[in-house]
Length: 224
Length: 250
Image 1 (cartoon, rainbow over the protein chains, first blue to last red):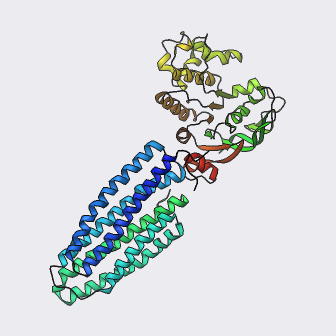
Image 2: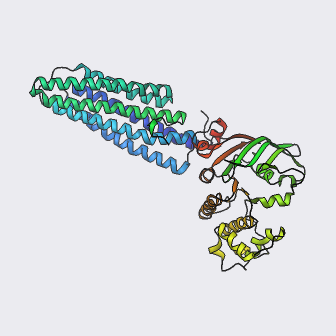
Image 3: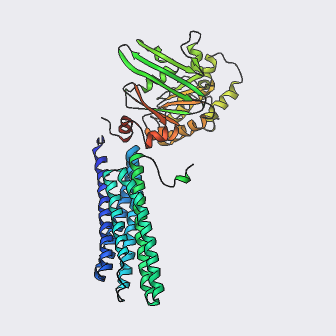
């Protein structure tokens, strides 16, 4: 890519890009760790997720500041403008993914107080898929690859249908034995959080398409 | 939208220097076209071709057509002086007549064109259109150079408006003004669009983005891209436009 006449502008844009990648790396790790804490019944591990989220919050603030600074100092246009507005949007999604990982960690700590329910393989599958979606959305962002982003958007349907299966499975468990209700209900929340993580990955992917192609594909029915 | 200005295969030279290369574009009536591009790209030459000021430069010549309301500016029966009444111009540096009063500056064009009428009413109307009336109504008989730079520029706009032009060409009208005076000129441009068609040359890209409906990017005498302003500044089609608006030039 061609460099800006003012080289500091490039450095500032690179710095913003790197901060976003660091943030993305943090939230990916958070999802992996929180799911391990849940499946391995390790409350200590769950605590580390809650600790790491402070880093995520700090980075979110730094990224917002970097974007504001770029907007006011550079008055960016064209691809720079699209990159910076994308950064401002996806930082919110990434931070929310971190929060959802924390919510799962809190559920894990709670669940670890009671004996385990029977293993639910669909839950691990949902977590894997959610994590993969986040990674793929971040890859699409790094590589500025709209095709990859489109794939993420398509794959969200898989995640949704897996989530609905899981809901039915957990409801069946509750009906089977009322003593399951509290734990199955907690797992329902975990499933919902994972499904939301997938939605945030989709948002990131949509913004990547805007960043690269300049076309906003969100909410096709709501356009003037 | 009805085309007000149509430029077809316009070429312009300063002796051997080919300053404009085969430029074609259309400006719909009651819209603002911004011309952007690096120094020496042909922006000023382009607007000076639109009211036949280019031909006043010794050694300058041009080919192609410029049509206003479908009428070719270079048709034999077109009188350049009369044309410049229809296609007015405002320059980078405010250039009021220094020995004249504010009032006389506004009516200078009318007198030159032999237009008679209610001068005080015309002066008030033009100064109101140029958003200057309230600031000068009590000092119309004072010298024009007693005004600030921003006021002088609006006086020049009032002078251009007094002869009731249909098209207004503005060559860097705010580049020598402070941000407040610039904002006044920009607000004025948006208001004037109701009654006329404007072509503005500017180095300030944010200004182009704020005031214009469409933007044309010139580079080395060529029209590289012309499109809706929002598209040019958010998603240009041409890589040279992208490089220019993002500051990756040179």
